[in-house]
Length: 335
Ligand SMILES: [Zn+2]
Image (cartoon, rainbow, N blue to C red):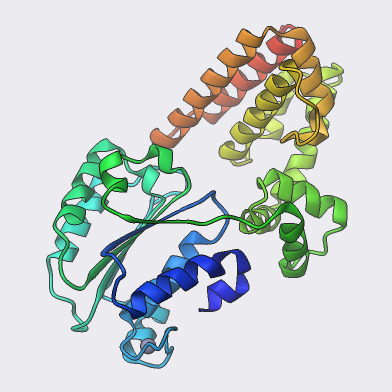
């Protein structure tokens, strides 16, 4: 499998899956779990091609009519179910299509595959709608699910799937891989900083580089230092960050709060999520009570939740709340 050779940390899982497949022991529902940015989805896409291929021999042939349809993105026996917009929910109408799909005959007269994820993007209603397809498996249908946060899945969904856990490479192996595979020429320091930001997930790091997130992050760090030194007004930052992905901003503040909490608890400053802003999280650890940091973390989780579930979240207001919270923790007033 191409993906497994390009992403060496996927290889052990791929081997397990292929072995079971060759012995016809692969379950009708698979669930790949692991943090975002390890390639679970891209691997499952290749696996669906394999399951649909009519002449596969351990890898998709690339030649048969099924493979041609697959590569054209028009295979009638493949259903992809993903949020219409990244970071949003999978809607119940999308899941209802799964039920319809599994109950029709395969058009190529062979297997049918549903690729769905991230599974935690389904709310309770959508999950319950999917359960029907999981409980009454149809012959020749395989459901391929992936999840970045399996803790957010219904137990009933998890218990009906065969689990595979994908583990990423070590930080150093990830760093070597990133420098070999990124189109951008990254110096060691930048590569390490992006990879840390991507929580060691190499494909997440690549995506961040492509979207210039690492450039934004450097700006973010500078802005946060200036904010602490009162060299910038907090409300000036609203316009500076206006076009950034809100999920990143939420994630960075989350990292800062976790770092502050860690330092408050007297843990060593090694391995901070936001090492570039160690001075800032340290000041919060000095200034704020443990409970205040805890409360800020709770509000932040709620904001993440709200961002995911709302159709048009007010990102300016969200950013405003984050900044005011942060200033409070620093012991500075927003006015
Ligand atoms: Zn083929």
